[in-house]
Structure formats: C-alpha cells, structure tokens
Image (cartoon, rainbow, N blue to C red; front, side, top):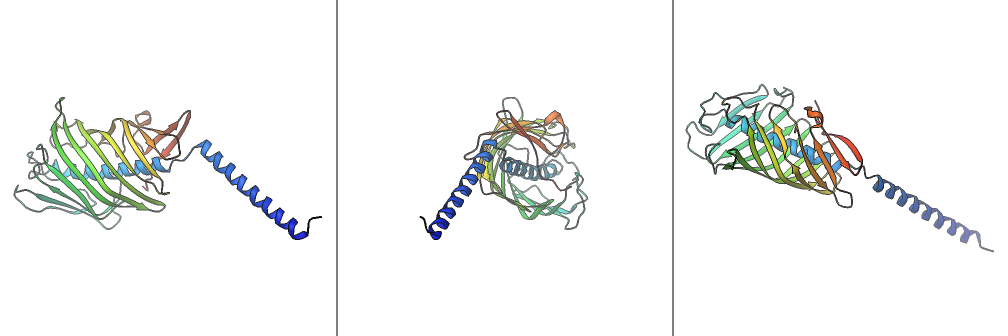
Length: 285
C-alpha cells in the first residue's frame, strides 16, 4: 500500500499535469479563435502619426513663398506658438521649425500637439529631387510621445502627370499608456488630387503604397504590405480607403480594410477567413 508521502506526491503531479493541460487547452483555444488585434491597431496608429507629421510639413511648404513659388501667406494654427524658417532668402538648405503650445490649446483639427516638428529642405518643395528631412523634438500628439525620422524625396511626375514623393520612416517610436511601438516603413505617395488649387491644401489627396514593419506593444513583430493604396485625404484625419495584409508570426494573415462606408473615422476592419473585427485607432479627443 502506498505511503501517505507517495500519495501526496502523486496527487501533486496530477494537479500540475491537469493545470498544464488546461493552460495548453486555453492557449489552443485563443489561437484557434485568433482574435488578436494589437499588431493591426499599433500599425494603424503608427501610420496615422507619421502621415500626420507629413501633413504638417506639407501644409507649411505649400503656403510659404521661400519653400514654394506660390507666394501665399503662411498659415498658422491656434495651437502653434511659433513657426520659423532659418532664413528670409531662398538659399538652401532651409530649416523649418514648428513649435506647438505646451498647454491644452486644441489645434484646428481637434487634436492636441506639443513640442517641435523640424524639417530641412534641400530645395523648393515642388522641385524634382528636393529632399525634406523631418524630425521631432519633445513631440507629442495627444497622449502619444513620438520620435523618429522621415525622409521625403520629390520624385517628380509619373506617367500620369502626377507628382510622386517617396517617404521613408526610420527609428519610429510611439509610446503612451499601454502603448510602446517600434515602426519603420518605405512608401510612395502619389498626389492624385488638389495640386492645382493654389492656396487650398485641405483638398489635397495622396495615395500611399508600400510596406512597413515593426514591433507592437506586446513585443510581437509584424509586417504590413499595402495591396490597395491607402487614401490620405487632407480633409479627413484618417485614411478614407485602402487595404493591406498584416503578417504576425504564428497567426493567420490579417486583412485590413479602411474607409468603411466612406465615413471619416478612426475605425477599420481586420478580417481573416470569415471572422471580421472592428478595430479602433486610439484617439483621446
């Protein structure tokens, strides 16, 4: 007959084995359901933040006679304390500095921004070959601290007569409450509408193609490849259309779909097989 000590040991082994089987079953169930959305959410937030920084610089470049030939009076937002160029002559390189308020003054688009966005121009913005290097200093958009580098290159006109910019983001980092993202990407932006309306920037529309990769807030890596151009419409803070595929190790490929019903909002759909999940891009206002 087994001793009490042996019985206790056998019981302990059985309990541990049962817990391991239960945990494995739970893990298998979670994987079978495959409802993880952190990677797609974080990737979408990164696209939003760095596309927004491009828009800030684009707006200034299109309204300044040194950076452009339009001779349009510069535009200022209530949330901007000061915006300056390094020189009053068109002698390049020129350096733009956009200094945002450190209080809670909302920008005209309803977002809070803090710190500085800096941009150096190797030539006039609309000239083929001009490069614009964008960086951040103590910059925050709403609840998210942002750092990294954006290199914008004017590639001139394509076969359809539309201006194309290449955009490379390196060392992108976005942090906030429960948010810790590393991100980089290489894209082309085709200026498909609004380029002929001098002085009006909010009708500008860009189509974005390319790919990005990074690490999400849970430490998992991902790769995103655009399959149908993202539409960056400056009249809307969010992508209004576009599709992509998101690859996450050990999970099925996610299909990302922006612009549900053509509504301007921070919602997109993540799908795999017949499972569709509505995902919200974090936004504090």
